[in-house]
Amino acid sequence: MRSDTQRNRRQLVRAAGKLFAKAKGPVSMTDIAREAEISPATAYRHFASVDDVLAAFRFGVGEKLRDFSVAQTTSGVELLESVSRHWVGLVIKHGGSMVHTRSGEGYLARLRSGAYYLTIQAEALERPLREACEELGLPPLGDEAMFLWNILFDPREIFDLLNTVGLDKDQVSTKLCAALRGAMAAWAAAEPTPAK
Image (cartoon, rainbow, N blue to C red; front, side):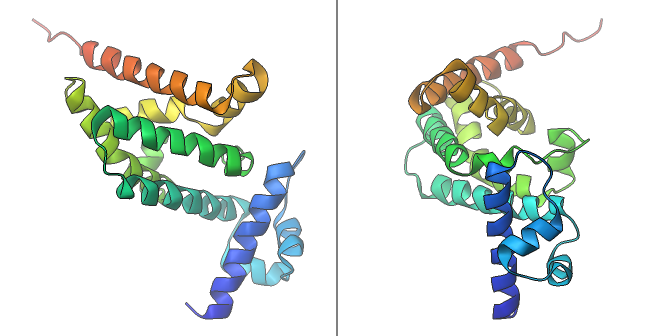
């Protein structure tokens, strides 16, 4: 990719993140292009829609989580909690923009169809979730563990706990990690009884 193309894409993603972090209403591609100091025509050459720009923004945050996860030397529950705490920090820093990402499809449907902004997040979580299941004596939960993590660590819910309940970052992380451990154990225990 040419350097000016890369620069324009970065500027558009950064502009979208900035605008959505403080948005009270809809944000258009024209708004994003203006903030990035790029023409709307150029913006549309890079991204087909506002949702595409937001997906690129979320992918960038997912890369930060993946890079953090890969660099960790801990394992099991400690690794999962460390990665999850890092995610809460990323949400606090960037999440105002991520809460605008919406889809008519469920999380697992999007993950399995290859939504690139979710697959990068799944890369970050695969080893921590797998090792935590092993350490807790649970069967491998695979994508279903990611589903549970996603429900609890959704940026909207993190902001709800921070802003509505009044918890601080450490309290949010601690409570969500404890809830995740409990949810995974309950999920594994709720395997259907085979029909007779």
